[in-house]
Image 1 (cartoon, rainbow, N blue to C red):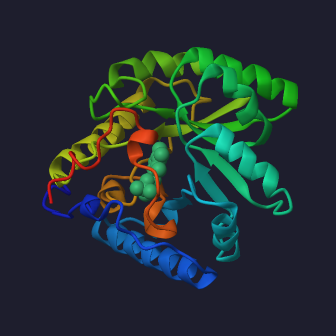
Image 2: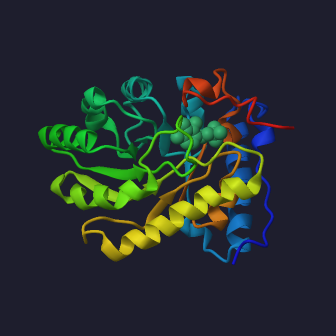
Length: 271
Ligand SMILES: *Cc1c(COP(=O)(O)O)cnc(C)c1O
């Protein structure tokens, strides 16, 4: 249905976004991103209220996060749990600021996530589900979670293989502190829009299939997909959460290989 839309990726801008250095910069960047979200929703005949913008603050200093807060952000995404936990501790005075952990988590760090995160988007093993649930029960907390799916087939990307997701979600009702909201993915990091789009289509179709068989307590309304370089395509394919870092905060000092081992952004980017 949407195949005729030829929205391009913005992966060629990767690493080139200007730094946001003031609350005004953040307001402007947020408004620009929201405008792009609205335009993508219009193209896809979707209500823009159905798409949540998750600003991603990884690598950025506390001062930047505070400016983002002043510009209206009330939830921030972080890829690494220790960095997220450190920032949470430093910003306890902002008691309506919530944290979403969006990166791979080792089982032995489940305790940290259970302590402070409001949302975890990278659930990809039963061992981790069990560890999170155990720690959450101790803390007397519940956690919104997304099951991460590897839709690009790249061995460097985390997440379950698509065919393993149905049996995986069957087992999740055993973990009562985990509120499953939906699926999350990182698309192929490519300037070829059609191949990026395929990843998003795969996630949506998988979600639609899962709806036939998933236990009633498993929520499948959410599709977290799309980042600075490709969120418009993700929205055209049904994203309900877009995770946007650079287009709001500015380019990051560290290469993305630091976050996604095996990823080489320069090689992936014919310009
Ligand atoms: C960093 C990150 C993003 C945001 O990427 P940008 O290019 O900064 O928009 C999205 N999702 C995950 C899992 C990330 O680690």
